[in-house]
Length: 387
Ligand code: GLA
Image 1 (cartoon, rainbow, N blue to C red):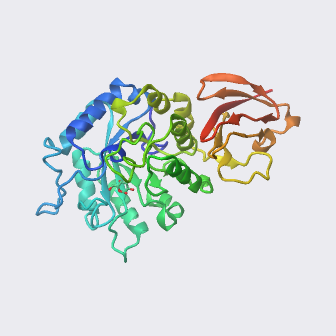
Image 2 (cartoon, rainbow, N blue to C red; image 1 turned 90 degrees about the horizontal axis):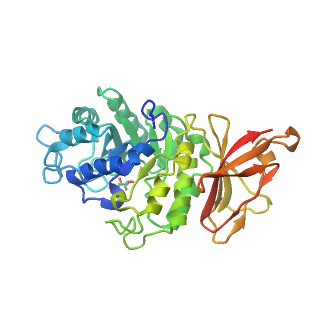
């Protein structure tokens, strides 16, 4: 898949946190890069390999420079970035607005320009910037603006991934800061309730995502099946069904979130691969105009729950992506009246529907389409207008 300017469309990649948390090292990252190629993830559009928290020493050196942990990364970050670049991929790292990162390593507070320069020197292409240990009197908004300026002036194109968990009404000011994506939610966990809560928390914010500043609903848990280092993310409470992972991937895709894989995809089963590399779904996410998806409540209108809805995303070529989401615990029929998406019966226009999970045409419909959707599941169609 050909990419455009950095951050124009939702970034796709892999991040170490969900599965490996503190247990990271250069061999893992190299291996991830190799397997991105051999397993077909790069061809499917995944590009960034991001090291999250816990990569540095606990202290800066005497010049105030961050130091990569020599036990975890004995060849150094420059060599690792070169390796990743050698595979035609991009290299991402992590820091934090505050004095410390969330796991207690040095943060970039009052070192923003110095750290941006170091990242550029190492060949970093992406910076995730967290929100822990922010001095109380400082404005988070200002600190994101600061790092954004530092990155934009460090001499290298570095995608800026802001991560303040949706606090301080971030969607109101983040676009102006220069960030390319912004976390709108608290940390995801590898369970259905977490997926559902994160998705529904963004249902009234569809208009705040778009080109160059994407609403990041957090890294994917698809394929984790409870396999995290951390109890918080899911080693004890974790794991979803395959349908739940499919629904998760569909929600993130149609709602325009960056797609950052969080599982150890090196051991992925076929179902996980089929989800993460579903090109029909990815194409909806990566559509160049990056329209936010708007929500339609299914008929009858009295069915008033956030658990059951349709997401409609207008695509660049005039097609319409429609997600029929049933996040409730019972099977439902979701009825879409085409009137509600701008197609009156009198226009004579029908919709030719392609099912993005079955990968096949499912027919031409006039006025109404009403799939029956099992609990925690979804139907995603790409509809073409036909006369
Ligand atoms: C925060 C972020 C997570 C992860 C951890 C690392 O909780 O939201 O995504 O980066 O910090 O400590």
